[in-house]
Image: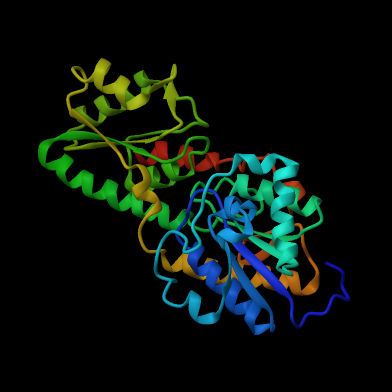
Length: 336
């Protein structure tokens, strides 16, 4: 956006893409009402990039007014909907989306989502669209933000489930193996495992054999513990097989505890956003509009320390934020 572009009468759009995350609705609300405060019109794109490229007559891009985003801040998911759209990588397909925006007089776009979503935002920016990204993914694996929108809620939902499983595990002297989300990044597994005092935490980034996990469960049994908890990120496999299946099939007879496996799955995406995620969504959304107002585009809005800051999209795409390995060691020490 040129610095001398008139601010009054601007039209912007907002979309959510990829996996849903609690707090997205607060970000949509913040984007919408902050833009209206500038005197701009706001349009919501339904179903992410799939809605952006859909024929205009399908009505996937609709006007959002202040009242349209009322009553959504305490709900998880996204009122705009989301969808995977691998065909968006095709330049010809993207041009349909750009043409849809241009035909409606929309001159800027806010993209709320994770790595794949921000890759799409980056290529749109390279295609000439004024884009600002908002860091939102439960995996917290996006560079440019110390913590991403939705990660705190997902961890709290998973931790609540593990705490409840531990109650029944203690009653029956069982070991609970709990699979949490994290195909490529173990942030949820590490955070939940540390917070619940898990005997073992298996992550995609840390090589942990079934033998090592079984030994830790055995040690807990010998020390007289009434339960054990193993947190496994879904991407932590061994030889291509699910770690929990190997433990039950090959080690169930030796470790003392009766083993039970639970896959939390998409329940981690549900639930009302935490106070932290509501505040983060509000701050991120307002900052995205501030970026557009001052002509700063092609950037990701994220949290660095206590401040909301921006990072060029070109610096974050194709990269994964590494885990804090000091927390891995802390979890091991505290599980004694």
